Structures are given as structure tokens and as C-alpha cells.
Length: 126
Image (cartoon, rainbow, N blue to C red; front, side, top):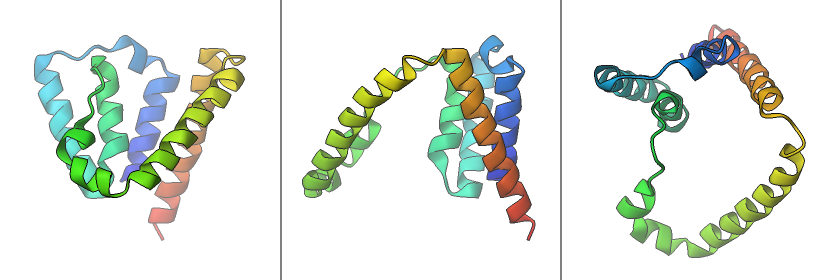
């Protein structure tokens, strides 16, 4: 199921449909319900929910920190190491990706997701 959703998302990206569509209020409820249902089916809410949210220009929110701050505080050394890795990776990535046009980058990511989606569909049929 997840592989098929990746393929559909890639087709939307490669055809330009993702950039052209803007969801209305009614469609937002439908997309939210659909992304939640698919996320429950595949056991991975983040990627599917993010794909659904792309059409809304929604602001980012620290939901996990607000709802699970005790659990996060209990593993603060791991969080600090991960945060340092994120900062270093972001700095390096900004230098490398700054040289690649956004259109090319989006196409490369889309092709990689397409390959992953096709693999998942084929592997899931075994």
C-alpha cells in the first residue's frame, strides 16, 4: 500500500500537479482523513501525512515536544547528539544542495521515491 502511495505521489510531482493544486476546506478534511487511514494501514503516519499537507502550506508545529516532553527529556543525550547531527548535516547539505537547481533536486528525489515505491509494490506481492 505504501509503495503504491509513493508512486502516486511521484506521478503528481513529475506531472506538476502537486505544484498547481491548492486544497479547499472540504478537501482538507478529506485529505486528512485519507492520510490518517493510509498511515494507519502502513504503520507510518509521518511520510503520508506530510505528503497530504504539502498542498496546504501549513506552518510547522512542535507537536511532539508539546505532547511528549517528559520522554524527550529522559533521553536528552541522544536528542543533543541527534540535534548536532542535524545542524552539521544541514550546513553541509545547504552547501551541496545550493549548487543544484531546485527543479533538478525535486526530479531526482521523485525518481528515487518512484524506484522505492515500485520496489515496495513488487516486494509486497511476494
